[in-house]
Amino acid sequence: MAKIRADQLSRHIAKQLSPMYCIFGDEPLLKQEACDEIRNQAFQQGYTEREKYYSDASLDWNEVFASAANLSLFAERKFIEIHLHTSKISEQGAKMLLQYCQAPPEDTLLLITAPKLDASAQKTKWFKALENNGDTVQIWPITSEQLPDWINTRLRQKKLNASSEAIEMLAAKVEGNLLAAKQEIEKLVLLAAKDGLISTDLMAAAVGDSARYDVFGLVDKALSNKTEAALKTLQGLKSEGTEPIIILWALTREIRTLASISEAVNKGQPISQALKANRIWDKRAPLIQAALQRLSYKHLMHLLRKANGIDRAVKGLRKASPWDELTDLVLHLSGIITLPPSLDLIALQ
Picture (cartoon, rainbow, N blue to C red):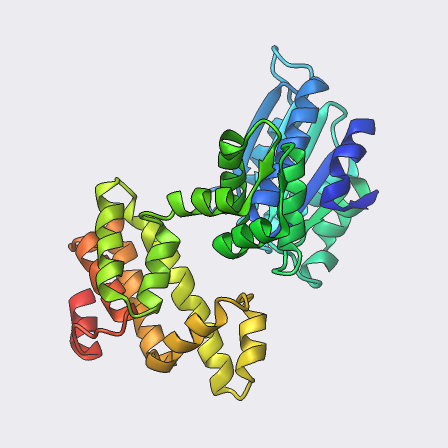
């Protein structure tokens, strides 16, 4: 069948739906939008019965494909979704997919989503079977160089027109987070004048308003060694009802990035290459480099262990206050050591 680019998908499915699709990649927003396009088109074409499955340990692949072949009394066509959480599937899953591809039911559409599939994953028998009998869409990440054009295209789709300076301002704010960019654009739709023009001043005001107690702002303040401001932001997020797991995700994501860069530099890679490999924006590079001067690789790995302990506390697997431990994590990231690592590890047990 066909390998389709994400930007070609709308035109392709408007002509004809394939019996099966595989959407894969590590950019959540673009992957979600591609799936939504297929879902909407399928619904318009009578695929009114929808079933969704996730490839965890409890998934019974026999049940999935037995269901795929049986329509309910109230639907003429069925839409099956299988969400893979890794690039590998079980032996049973691969076997059942191969059997399904050999004789797919006429009135059933199969959609499989997956994270990034490397070259070896794309050579597996189950993927080749999907590729030969359906369409695949690989979702590529938007690079820092591509982001301004991506933002400009999205603005124009909303009948908005922004200066290059305003677009660069938004790109710097979201730092590659496409979901955040989409949310900011939706807000600009409400703020823009009737002519749709987005000035630099309007963009600055829009971006500034959303950053009062912003999770990413918290991370930057901690990295900048602005401890008092970071703790104030953390308290603000708590008072606004932000879930601890969201804050933990943002902090852990940053610590992992720092650890990756630190490890690469320790192995002899130039800092500029390590920053680029980890998709660090030029404007953000000085902040990251300053943080790495006080946070060693060993310290960062210790912070990841702390983050894991907080995750268990959030889930009720440890008797501890997630907010108190988030405060401690922010202090460590800011360069303030509250407990020696040996005592800290005892506290996390």
